[in-house]
Length: 97
Image (tube, rainbow, N blue to C red):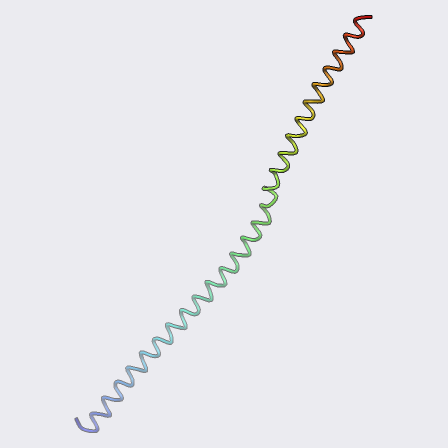
């Protein structure tokens, strides 16, 4: 192999290596941009999830409201029962006179 052929071969392989490095660099840049876009979307989604959570916390508070409503209903029924007993006792007391 002559010096001219050796230099020609060297420059061909150098050009191939440069092309490979450029392709790899472009691919890395594309991967980085895709990762950044995914991060941006994830941050936006997290904000929406937090907002949804804040808006639905009140739904979970309904359990406490329902418990209180049941207690009020039970108290009202108890008052009704006692009121009926008092009314019956008064009726009987008036009837006995």
